[in-house]
Image (cartoon, rainbow, N blue to C red; front, side, top):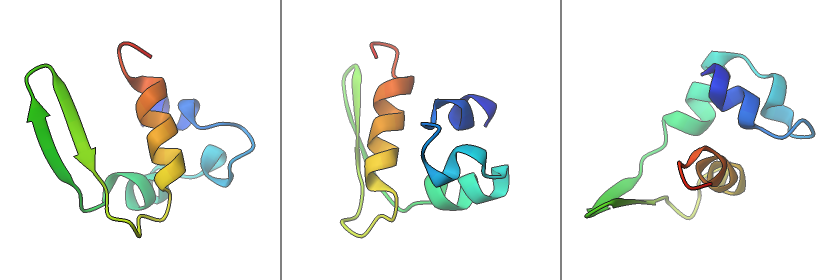
Length: 65
């Protein structure tokens, strides 16, 4: 959770959020996960509240990013 919070840009409202808020806003999202060999694709619903932030965090925290 510390790594996740540290990866959020400073200008975003969730940069100083508590862990419970991060869990509710970013981690407890219904998504479809599909595995393709070495790649994992997460299909988020179109109404995901923090979709842009979730995408930027996934890119920042990926091993190749």
